[in-house]
Length: 347
Image 1 (tube, one colour):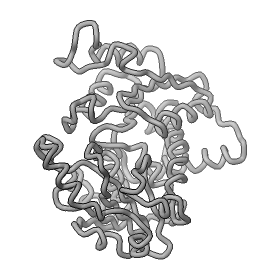
Image 2 (image 1 turned 45 degrees about the vertical axis):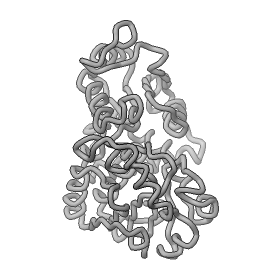
Image 3 (image 1 turned 30 degrees about the vertical axis):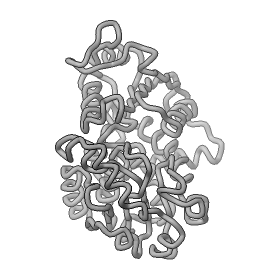
């Protein structure tokens, strides 16, 4: 595929990219990882600037983007909304505290080659979809690419690292049984972006996808519909189960992670009821990935998690630190996958 087709495009969700385009990104990511291992310089973005706006805290995302830009000869600017006039949508402005996104986006676009944004949860009062609208607003007003570093709906950068890790460990997507499962956490404030993007990616590549969660933990119906369509087009499968153990049986990839219960978010996926949300969470403390649960998966199964993991709740130390854990390979692959995305869209 001609890489020119990527130039200048936003990277907001994998729903915007074809299977063939995702495969191209993966090819570039593996090549850049190989070059890094051999100590070869690859200054594909020399003198290029990435602006990173973080409404939320970050370890892996911020450092993988900063390291990636440095390794490719460019520079990443970290922008804390509390230290600038906070970018806000029309109608959400506060005099002398915020600046309209249209103005921020057009200003930064005059100074660099891409804008990357992370926003979900508290900055938008957990109003589902609002953070994604903020990122789309940046993209509307920017003539340079906008990258979604995680919103309340999608986390395409994590999904690319997930695919890269599966390909490394399994060798193929075809026939790979991929289980995205909910797991217990004491905190109910968990966005849906990772599980939604994970199943989008797995379905798009034709894996045999299982989504496992207790009743009341439903994901966005729009995302589920897209996964059903894509899995059929790619020759894979997609199913939903409310039984943790059923979801784990025979799986090649086990990806248990907490996300919000339906009552926490407003429509289209629920109503705001934190008390009911906590009750649903506390009723499923047995949804933990421990040694016994891993033994229900395939003997060669890998454990994945986007990190940070809630140890002792989502997963035991024995699994996260054990031989089947691919969580830290997955974390490293954030670097290589994002470098591939940036090199393709920013050149």
